[in-house]
Structures are given as structure tokens and as C-alpha cells.
Amino acid sequence: MRIAILLVTALVAWRAGALRAATIRGVVVEDATGHPLARALIVAHPVAGATAEMRSVRSDSNGRFELAGLPPGAYLLLASRRGFAPVPYGQKQGKGSGVPLEVGENSEASVEIRLPRYGAISGAVLDENDVGLPDCEVVAYRDSHPPTPAAHATTDDRGRYRIWGLEPGTYLVRTAGLQYEDGDYLPTFSRQTARVAEAIPADVALDRETGNVDIRPFPGRFVTVTGYAWPMAAVTLLADFGSQTVSADANGNFRFPPVPPGPYELSARAQAGRPRQNLAAWQAISVDRNAAYYQLRLAPLPQLQVRLEDPQGQAIDAPSVQILIRRKDLSGAGPSETFRPPQLLPPGRYELALAPSPSWYAAGFNGRARAEGWNEFELTASAEVKFILSPHPARIHGIVQDRGKPAAGVPVYLEADGIEPRMIRTDSAGQYEFYGLAPGSYRLLATFEARGTAGSRTIELTEGQDQTADLDLAVSQ
Image 1 (cartoon, rainbow, N blue to C red):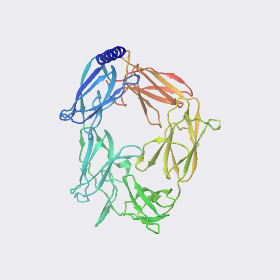
Image 2: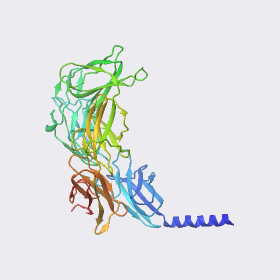
Image 3: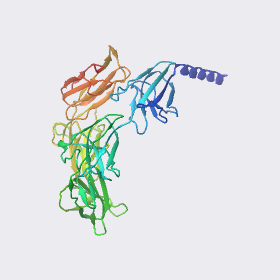
Image 4: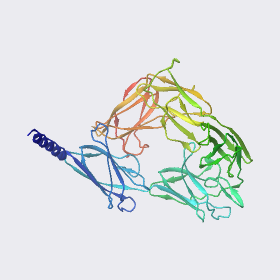
């Protein structure tokens, strides 16, 4: 009898939950043509503060999908498929962030999500007589300071190239250098310049191909990079457009195929399986028009230690502090990970940063007064670097309102000169919070649209200040 009562109670609870559950149905189509997109991934993220869990599903052969049994609340939908730019539901004209979709008890919502293809740049690499040059590597760089590689392509038999998979923005296009039996061509930006400042930028938009970005590279002479690495090692020559690796011979000599003049990084690592294989070397080099010969003496991997001090120079034991580290080379910054001191690392260039903390902010790094962003350094031997941490971080918090009502799931951007922008979304009550801030001037913007939307608010923070800053949802006029 008791078992029967329990079963009935469970069935009633299940039916009550099913009656309260919501369903989101929809279709994913190609933006340019309206054709259904099969196998697109749709992910539903509940807005912070909700009790629901993330759910995902793939569209069927007709592009349709269904997310059933959802607890009532606000969800952020993101659709993606290989070859297309991921799109959040509610995004306007390929810019900005998605808008939360509200579903109530026992309700159904129907949506359409249109996926655009990434942008592309196309053109030709031509010689001095406007004849196409085949098999030439072409690199698209984000127009930043310094430019960072984004994607690349190789010219076909007629010298044509097409670089795809580009996010919206401005790019600089350059050849990576080309060597033929009858002569060499040096790395050259469109339209025929070796200087970044003189390069002609190409604007890229989603679902659009920016064409006729032609390049006429300068004839020149490649240089052979040779050297000595001991003990025997695998040696890598890295440029901003790629890398190549060779093995040193039994005498420690190595030789790379000819390369165009320019900046490079040369690194060596003792070959796996050999005694004392945790040996490495690294050197930043500049290859000019003369033959280049370099000696690399491999040494044990350097150990990096991070010392934490307060502004009075006293050591701090702060196990809750998270230090982030990432490798940085000519091709840009790599992914970040948590630094766990002491740590053995291959020699090279690195960046360290303090993860946002409610208890501390980075007031200095190795003698520098400002340290709240990424801090670059070279590691060639075992070393100790030092963060100065202040126990008085500032904090900004508030509510984002849309026509007088709290707005859930709104992206709030925090920007300041010299640091990477931070973004969080408001919770289900429209609240946001940024903590671990250094004193200074900050710009706040709450918007579903692009970050450049007008309506930002400037906040001046002093050390340890707890600042309330309620924001209105910014929309373009």
C-alpha cells in the first residue's frame, strides 16, 4: 500500500513538472538562401540565477529542432555549424549579442535562426608582368597593433587565392614569401609595400567576399638559416606566418630551407627518448640578407616562480589568488591556463596576469606600476617574477534596466585603456558585478548590440571603492 502511494505521488509530481515545462522549437537556415541547415548545433544556456541546466540538440535534415521539457525561464540560444559564423538568437545584423528568450509554464516558443557564412578575402598574387604566381602562401592579419595572423591560403595555378573563415573586421593581406628556381619573392603587403603602415586594409563582413585584393611581391633573395644545437635536438624556426622543424645531425648541425629576411624565433628541444631530454633553448633572431648561422646551447628547462608581495614589500600567502599564464610568439598569444608555481617551462616569451579576484588587484609587476592586464616577459633561465597585490580592490555593481524594468541576460562591457575588455551578462534579476578592479577610469556599456553602440558611462574608481552604477539598456538610434 505504501509503495502504491509513493508511486502515485511520484506520478503526480512528474505530471505537475511536465505541465509546467516549456518547449522551444525552431528551424536553422542559411542566411543568404533560406535553405535549411541540417546537423546545426543549438545550445540553450539559462540566464544566470535560473535553476535550469544547459541543454543542446542538433537540427534534423530539414533544419528543425526541438528542446522540450525546459523549466520556465530565460534562455540564450546559440546555433552553430562548421563553415558558418555562430549566431545567438536575437542578434542584429551579424553584430552584438543574442537576446534571451523567455518561456513560461507549459508554453511553446517558435524561432528561426539564420546562419551567415564567414567573410572571405580573394585576389591574385602577380609578378612584375601581371602573371599569376602559383603555390604562394598568403596570410590575412587582423589590423591590430601589432598585426596578428588570422587565416591563410595558397594560390592556385593562376595565382588566385581565397582566404575564408574570417570574422567581420579589418585585415591586412601579405604574401609569406615565395621561392622559385628562377628567383625569389619577398613578403609583401597589398598593394606592393613591405611596411605595415603603408598596407591597404581590406574590410570584411559576414556572407561577403572582399575581392580584387591583389599583391605584387617584391623580387629579392632568400637566406639559408643554419647553426649548431647540442646536444642533438629538434630545432624549430618560427615566423608570424608559420613554422618549420628540422633535426640536428649527429654532430649537432642543422639547416633550414631558405627563408625570406625578417624576424624569427629559433627554439630547440632535446629529442624525445634521449637521456636528459628536458633540455631546451630559445632565441629571438632577425634574419637579414646575409647567411645566418646560430649556436644553440641547450640547458635544463628554466623554472619560473611567482612571488606575491603587498605594497609594503611583505610576502603574501594567498592560496585563493589565481595567476594566468600564456605563451606569446610571433604568431600571437596562445591560450591561457592557470600557473602553478614553481613550474618548468620551455624558454621563450610569456605573459602573466592576475585573474579577477574579490580580495586583491595587481598593483605592480616586476617594477611596473600598472599590472591589471597581461604582463610580458622573456624566460631564458630560471627566474622569479613579482606581483604587487593590493588588498583593496574596487568593485562596480548595479542593475540594468530596459524601459524601467530589470533586464536579464544583457551583456555588460567594462573597458579601460591598456587592458582587455571584460564582459558579463546580467542575471535573472538584471544584476551585474565587476570586482578586483584597480583605481582608474572605466567605461561601462550595457547592450545587446555591438560594443561601439553609443551610451557608455564613464566611472572613476579610487582604491577600495564600492561603486553602484545602474545602467540603461543602450540601443542604436
